[in-house]
Length: 66
Image 1 (tube, helix red, strand yellow):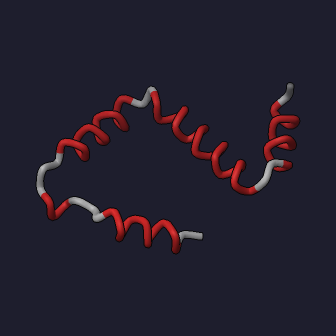
Image 2 (cartoon, rainbow, N blue to C red):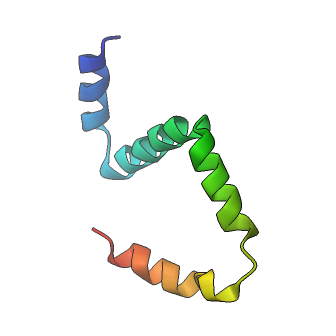
């Protein structure tokens, strides 16, 4: 299957599945990026509550995103 065919197939998917595909591809790009892994580990290990995001605030922000 060519890239053009893959793109056409992706565009024929429902919007929700297009979003899932976009997330999948983004995760694939980041999977082997050592800088991203280091940054993610630093954020996970941050024990300072002032740097944390509350779950409800994050959900609200995600709901408002286009």
